[in-house]
Length: 345
Image (cartoon, rainbow, N blue to C red; front, side, top):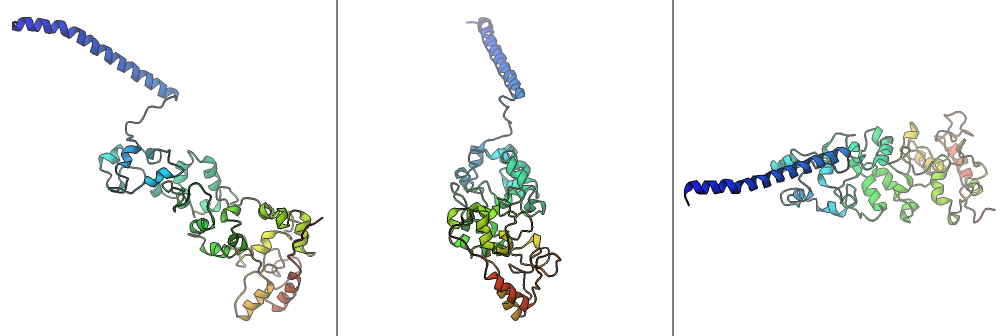
């Protein structure tokens, strides 16, 4: 075959090939247009080409050339891709991941920035926490307590299938509230493993309590049980004695937390701290402190704003916290308080 004949044959066979290539191009264009339309409609959002996928992230994050994050897949956020929180990883990967560059790290964000990220899935919890004093005073943001890379979702390793026990709460809350958690561990609530910090406090609700303490509902969540004996206003009235009739919405004379969570300082009492042993502080103990030359904190009867505080007008019968004779009288009344009826008719 001559060179001229070969060229003629090549021209004849090339025409169908060009038609086939053109058809493929048209099909590709149609798929692109349909995919774009779907993403506009919000049905199937187009994948960001800068996303590399969790599998790519884990090629390094197995503790060999980067931090080991395999525990993440045993926790409550296991189904969430890395780039959902950290943003596109292509540039980070191309840079070899050196020193965590070219990737978002929410843990490094300034205080108050992390909730915007968490609110994508946890809007109610974030909105509630934003109104608590932990957040408004700049004390604790989401990532101060939570770590999505841990199996339990907290900053320390915990069981993802169980609620925190007292040991877990002490480890978590004790980072900032060591005194309160230490006191609580001495309480019967802790020693009998009946209640944890989370039984009374909820950092995801504005008041930070699981129920209002002013009307005794906080304590009666458990103590309204028949077995605990305080299942009616009459039972509470019996417990607080003839001198403190039930009036939880008014004077607070029968308010559980007034006696069992006395403030530990005389000024700014509402802002705490309060004794978390949940034991009453008897007036006799105040006299013991005075005998040692110490300035006593309020006890369960005197020195609390609104309760027998000689410095506050209208605080019931006034007693001076610094006078041993006043505390001796109060102790006599105190000894008549605290009974729990076997059954109140």
